[in-house]
Amino acid sequence: MQIFGTHDDMTRAQLAKVAERARKVALMADGHVGYVMPIGGVAAYENAVSVVGVGFDIACGNAAIRTDATLADLGATPEEVQRRLAQLADRIAETVSFGIGRKNRADDAPTDDALFDDPAWEAVPAKHRQALHTKARQQLGTVGSGNHYVDVFVDEQGALWVGVHFGSRGFGHTVASNFLALGQGKAWGERVPEIEVLLDLDAPVGDAYWHLMNLAGRYAYAGREWVARKVVSLLGAREMELVHNHHNFAWKEMHDGEELVVVRKGATPAFPGQRGFIGGSMGDDAVIVRGVEPNAVSEQVAEAQRGALYSTVHGAGRVMSRTQAAGKRNRKTGVVLTPGRVSPEMMQEWVNAKGVILRGGGLDESPHAYRRLPEVLAAQEGTVEVLHTLRPLVVVMAGEREFDPYRD
Image 1 (cartoon, rainbow, N blue to C red):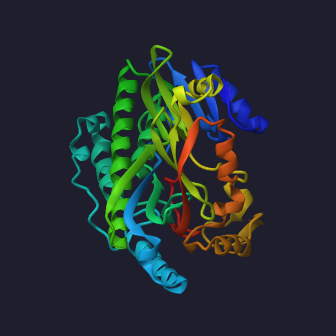
Image 2: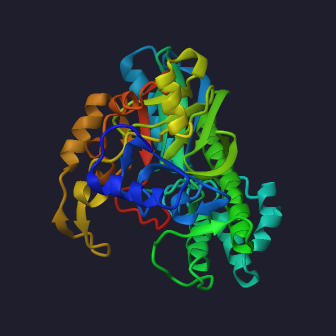
Image 3: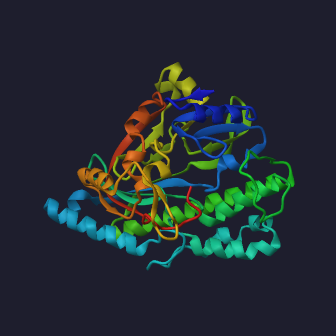
């Protein structure tokens, strides 16, 4: 059992419970309590997949594009640069849809993608298939709320990057919810407890879930790449490099000479040479990382890589729950029922000091609610190397009271 960093007793207890049914488990340094399996957890099974392990936001992940534009291209003075960035932030907020539906100006998402004709759709019961198909088309290219974002960064050489974070939206949520029910012997559409359900991939229900999970992965990739490229076009730039990863997903992989199904719940694949994009928070740097080559590190680091099933962090990791940070409100009236630990002034002071132009974003996503990414990466014991450090210039998220049932 490979555990990076320090964690509370509840998080470690969750991992231990998962280990009772998994062949191998690991916990990344950004880990914290999740549904059944901790966020930042990795578990390997023999020809089976954990529905709750993959999670309700199937294929949530990050994409980053390095552009041919530079910070210097935005203006000759700091004031001009800030003005251009503010204009860009407004255009992103107006063009890309945040929250639950597509309601902004951009309406050219790839809703005719070949994924909509994939045979995997046949795994959805016939009477529910068209409704899910329609929902998926309508939501492709929407970002959602919570910690999902569109960011513009600058790297250490002055190049501008566009980064996005979101998953398969209502499509993935519907698949996860209903296979959780089917795995408990219930019918599609029934509500069931969020408990561990392992599906045998040789059984019809496991095979159906696997194909739909992978379809949700294609869906998430299509959506993230469309949004990121839309923002690159708003910037008037060209794409030079793409780094793209899921961090809520399951893969068939070879480990120690045997094929295992590896579930990563809030963990980024980091095989030797594989690149990943890892975000911090709205007021912190992000990074492009690469899994280190075993022949370039000590045996101790190589052993840690193997123990982690070649995985790393997916972000900085929460230190406050959403309710702890933002408090609790009446959803209908907006009246504060319980105050949170973060005030609007605290959040704004942080992002202003960082020079970030923020659009949207709730107190539950304030930098105060997260660990610091450099410390989290350091706790990964040298298993990844940082290729680029990305300083946020523009952060666009859903508004604080934007309702979205599909956020992770």
